[in-house]
Amino acid sequence: MKHANQFKAGVRDGIPICLGYFAVSFAFGIQAAETGLTPFEAGMLSLLNVTSAGQFAGLSVIAAAGSYIELAVLQFIINLRYMLMSAALSQKLDSATGTLPRLLIAYGVTDEIFGVSVTRPGKLDPFFSYGCTIISVLGWVGGTVTGASAGAILPERLISALGVALYGMFIAIIIPPARENKKIMYCVLAAMVMSAVFACAPVLKNLSGGMRIIIVTVAVAAIFAKMFPVEEEGAS
Image (cartoon, rainbow, N blue to C red; front, side):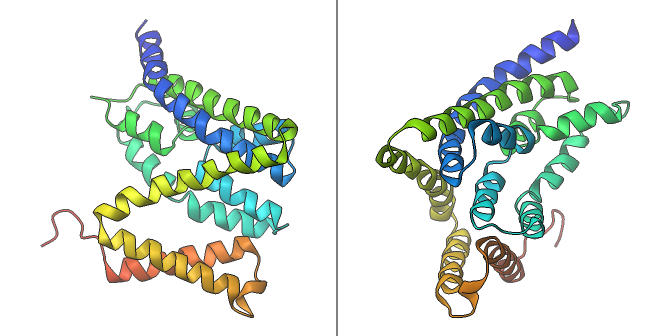
């Protein structure tokens, strides 16, 4: 009964995530259709990854016919934060929690699911994570398949218009924190400038899109980590 109640609580807390995921993944589905993926392929991609930024970046590598190495390195860099989230979330699990439950929980570690899980009082029941993950992934995959199906049948002009949602999503992610923190704003501007240089410079523009993303991400992150280091708690 306890596990059933925890599962229901996870589903309840995951419903808002599900709705948000459906909207974002709908735009991803449209983009996937434009790249040449079928609704089934796009749905499987979302089911096996569950990472918005990683999937959108992965599409650019697929569209550019990039190598598997580029794709693997790109995904490692973009999704590196999930390693930190998983480490933090593991501290909320009971020490008796087995390997299989931990692996199932790790599958559903996203920014939003981590947020609702880490704020749960006391120890985290794996069944809460199961419920939250299942309902959230249903929204993510469902939106992807719906968007990809719409992209396969809707007129090209309408698809292009709906595709603007992707850029709107990224702007909505970047602008609020950039307005509140000048360091983030400078970091975003530096990434934009470096991306423009890589896209226009005679030699650099010959690099694949995926490789340019990797270089810009690592370079900008390293520069700003050096310029504005984050002090550890308790440091004088």
